[in-house]
Structures are given as structure tokens and as C-alpha cells.
Image (cartoon, rainbow, N blue to C red; front, side):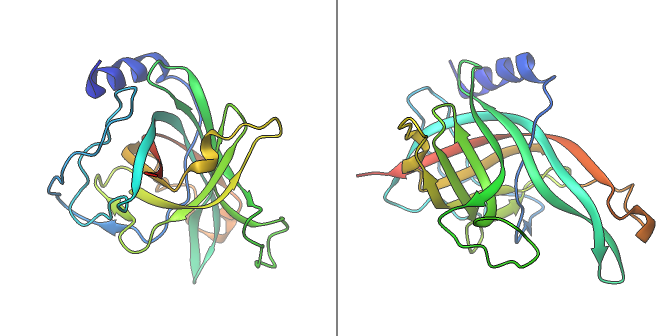
Length: 224
């Protein structure tokens, strides 16, 4: 089954679900892109698309081991910003599906136990990072790659991302599928941008917005 066909069939089945997204940082905007060489396919046949010009590729020495389709929301809260207010992403919330349309991973934010928390405004046993938890309960935490790890391909959608794994955890019963992850890509995004209403004055502080989005997430491990 081709990537395009499988993706179309999958979103036709799960498109009505409400789930969610990811931390954005250092977004570089482009108006057009030049396709790079296609990336390797997973055994299940899900192939990442060509990357836009200027986006950092997955470094050599890593191979793709899992491709997924995600449906969810990017969740924002209105906070003071400078002399005014602005929506700030406080967590993604998404369900990731395999080639057969079966849920395999959940995506959210959580404390990374491998990085001590240094923010006095946050009570947590680790820095809050984008998190993926497999059905075997293994987890990986990641942050946006620098430089050029975030590129806006569609002005109406959240950025495409390359993320560096910064923490891992086996499940309590030994699950380890995501424990080998070195990089995560978020590609083929739709939606997810903060809304233009509901956060315009100090009286709006605390307002929340849950914005639907879709994306494809790809997971990499060391070649050897």
C-alpha cells in the first residue's frame, strides 16, 4: 500500500477523533521549498516526505524504525506578554496511529526525569518536554533540534520539526520500543495554530484554546 493511499484511508477513518500536539521553538518561515531526496521507508511502508529547503535532516548514523499518523489538538493558554497578551502553547495532546489504523502511541508534555527542573515557576521532577508513550509504556522526551529544526511549510499550519531525543524510559513491565529513539520528526502538518480571537486584553488572561491538528511523526534509532 502506498504512503499516500494509506494516509488517505487512515484519516478517512479517524479524522473525527479529538486529540493533540507539541512544543514549538525557533520557527523559520519559508514561502516555498525545494524537495530534498526522499527518506527511507519503514518496514510498514510509511515514507517521510521530502524535506523543505533549509530544514535540518536527520543526522547520518540513524535509521527510521517507525512512521505514524497523528490526530490531536495543540492546546494554548492566554498569558501576559510584553505590554499585552498572547496565546502560549501549554501542551500537545495527540493519538498516533500505525499503518493499520491501530493506536500505538500517545503524545503530550511531561517532566523528563533525565533533565533536572531549573524553572522556579514549575513544580516538577524534570524539565517539561514533548513526550511520546508507546503502548508498551516506554517513553521518549525530545526538544527542537538546533539549528534549522523548525520550518513553516504552510502558513495555516504548525511547523515541521526535527527533534533531538533528550530522555528515555522503559515501561514498568520492560517495554522498550521508544527507549532507543534518537530523533523524532513532525511532518505533513495541518492546522494547530493559535487562534486570532479570545486573547486580546488582560481580561482574557487564562482563556484556553484547543486547536485541532494532524501530523505525521517519524522515529529514528542508531544505525548500529
